[in-house]
Image (cartoon, rainbow, N blue to C red; front, side, top):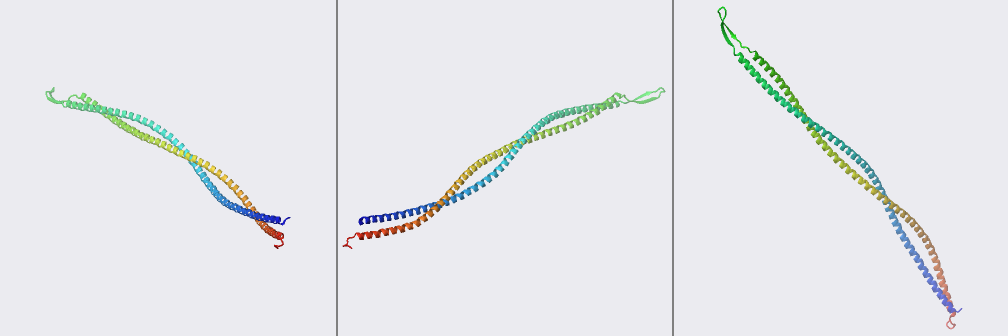
Length: 339
């Protein structure tokens, strides 16, 4: 073969060898850069994953605390609802009891009013009877006074009578008038007065009894009025208590509904946290795989670095050999005169 051609081929081979070494170096540098980028992103991913795991643990802890608080609140709400229902039932019972008492006292009031009307009539009748008895007593006393006056007048009619007896003696005697009728009239008038006095005493006693009965009836009506007023107030209070108990029960039921909604929200949160946990586990496995790949890549790069030294060493040897052979061929191809 012509030396010039060999020289040209050796030079071209030397050029290609140099190019190969250059591109091999670029390849090695690219691998190092990619490994650095991968390691950096892996480290960042590890930091992000660790932060996400910490946040996940905090969210899970918060969720547990919220769940415990919610359960305690639900139990307390259940107790309040039961107590509210009992209070409402008790209030309704009180309403019925108060209404029964009001009806009873209104009935008692009607009876007391009837008693008062009857007692008033009895008292009025007793007053009339007393007035009649006193009028009869006055008449009887007037009759007695008149009879006594007539008797006194009759007795005042005594006269002295003078006569001559059979012996010729003058005799005198006092002629007493006959007062039998007048005395009988006086006795009759005295009996009438005593009878009228007894009748007046009985009438006065009847008036006292009727007055006491009327006063008792009036007091009974007043007591019934107070009882009816108190019963109406009690009914109104029981209605208000029932309204308050119903309002409290409604608020407890609204609180129960709100707690149920909160429980559903916590269930959704737990479901989301579970999905996050699965995602974090998956990312953790992926990160572990990535770390394993990075380690394997690091070992691979380390072997390539070792091989690079061999390749560069052989490349330098090859280039040196090609240059020496080129120089020999150039010297061989040089004319004798130039030598």
